[in-house]
Amino acid sequence: MIPPRMNRQAYIALTLLFSLAFGAVAAQTPIDSSKGLKDYFVHFFPIGVAVGPKSLSGEHAQIVLKEFNSLTAENAMKMGPIHPQENVYYWKDADSIVDFAQSHGLKVRGHNLCWHHQTPSWLFKDQDGNPISKAILLNRLHDHIRTVVGRYKGKVYCWDVVNEAIDDDSTKFLRNSLWFQLCGEEFIIKAFQWAHEADPAALLFYNDYGTEWPQKRARVYRLLKQLLENAVPVNGIGLQAHWTMVEPNESELRRTIEVFSSLGLQVQITELDISVYPSEKRSPQESKEWPTAFTQSMEQDQIKQYQMIFGVFRDLKEKITGVSFWGLSDGQSWLNQYPVVGRKNYPLFFDRDFKKKKVYWKVVDW
Ligand code: GLA
Image (tube, rainbow, N blue to C red; front, side, top):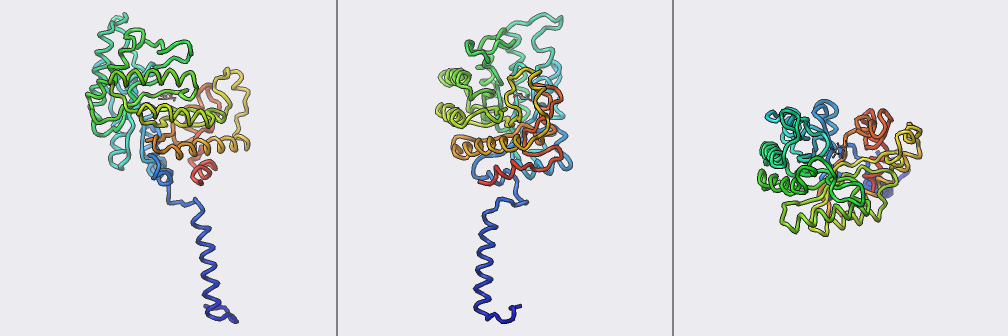
């Protein structure tokens, strides 16, 4: 109804003005409850999350499906859980993640095939508990890779083939793990070759943390360059991205992505979380003294850090083929147990009630 004392033309002009102004505001606001993270970043890269089987039903599954288009098994595909005895595989958890992804059209990142942690107890010993030879260990690795990659052939689009093989000590090169002690660097080369044989279409990644620290980055670069020069089938680098509010800084982050990309490798951010505590290299005692509430200043610093890193990712989107968070909500994060058991952390986009934190809205608003 036209208000009294207003002619028709004035009324039309006014409503037009109003709707233009209102429409412009609506178009600018990023808040659209029908969208998930994957939709905001649809023109950039897939957005993933690490899950266990419990995240695949009920309310959690709804969040996973709304927000993400890629899954990583947080533990289920690691050698310890999936291959608990020499001739026994435990497929149930990994299968449930892959089946869920398949039935809902999500990608799956395979994680991981060869690592020095979460290995099964039988792996490095014979039946009497004595150390095994290099030939036997490589044979076991071959069986493992052939079986696991073979089972998910065509369903897992990329694999973290080798995880964390570089030493943290800047004077050393490869980590002095049991893999290295028994096989030298050959286990790395063989792992990639066998993964490629088992699924020639899968993209194969080397995955590590601390890749932004110049001294570690240089050694990861050296390893990858050597592999490529020797025609080892490696397609990408996974930057784990267990970061803090001060690390990495923007220039090191850019440099890291650019340097690895210059080798012709895909770059993926594979395990993203931002601890609200300053540095995880503090002693457990010092870490314990840090306040455990999520203060306003922590919230602000975390927002700034996440905005910065997503700004860099968007900028370098041609080089980045995936960004995955390490967990769905703050309450589920491994950082509540590391480096101080039971210290509350707040590293992700969803709080302990699975509600979106302010950082979520700030990151999708660019
Ligand atoms: C490393 C591993 C992951 C996970 C995290 C901590 O980054 O690659 O699988 O275990 O540590 O949870």
